Length: 291
Image (tube, rainbow, N blue to C red; front, side, top):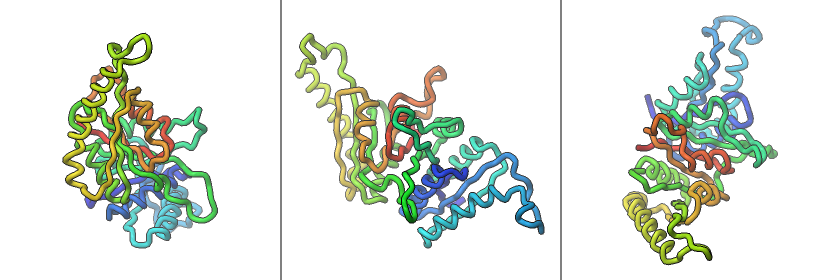
């Protein structure tokens, strides 16, 4: 199968916003865009019956309308529609295994309720082997909707514990495709032994910061060489990694976070940084599985 970017459609404004983001990304990467709508009650394709009697009418309309809107905006983009008679979660996980990335819409809620994940999205994010991008719906405007997340640069969150090549490859490739700068962020909580009655021991925190900065520079070095045209900045913040990442994402075009493929059975399916990012970041969030 040729490389594709897949977006899940359900007829909501959120999924349409995701489709616009996915179309922009597919065009930049010169890939085919696949519009996927899954519904267990799809029936075998009927023949020679009026449209009003077609039980698949609304499913077809969701894909047809999205395709027409996207094709008008991206006339040179290859777009295919895909109707699947399956549970949405299972269909999306299968599609993720066949795609360069899968893109899902998020719920546009108030900050106090700002959660991306629903019953379907969580298992897809936690189980997909390929990157999953979550896109919020923008406020409606006149004319075609803008592509969400085109402002700002790409921010990538790095833990520096173990290899993270898949994460960095996705972040650098996305920044290169979009002509955006990349900022690598590492957050590290101040350890107990660095705390003193009047605050923190600056000698200890300087040593911790320098050590982390050296590790960060070493992790980024081969990717700077591979993508010499990407403008790269990096920062080490001595605070909760989750807080550092969410703060760094303000104004970003895309936040990239990692998810370990192999986590202990008793551990949550997503780490604290990924969970904080997808719950609180306002920009699109890409969750990349890595070793």
